[in-house]
Amino acid sequence: MNNNEIKNILMKTLPLDEVYVTGDGSHFKIIVVGDFFCSMSRIKKQQAVYKPLIKYIENNNIHALSIKAYTSKEWKLDKKLNKV
Image 1 (cartoon, rainbow, N blue to C red):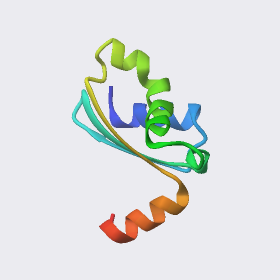
Image 2: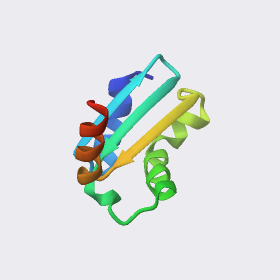
Image 3: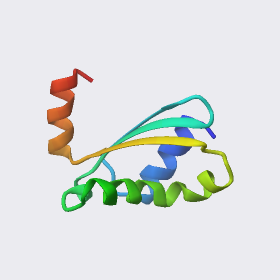
Image 4: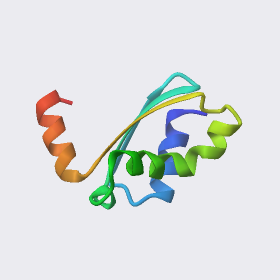
């Protein structure tokens, strides 16, 4: 599984504005941005991102996953603070 495949899956299945994926084949870091996260807790955000990827996790195409999920407002603030 590669970074673009994960990005495409997430963009097709979730109403996201931005998706950033980095990884080395089975370990990935994902940043997702979408306003549908507005009313969700941190755990609910992560569950929403895991859902379309669960079959790839179960068959070990994805071994480790780090997820950061933001609303557009949260992302703008985090980008400024972290100079992403």
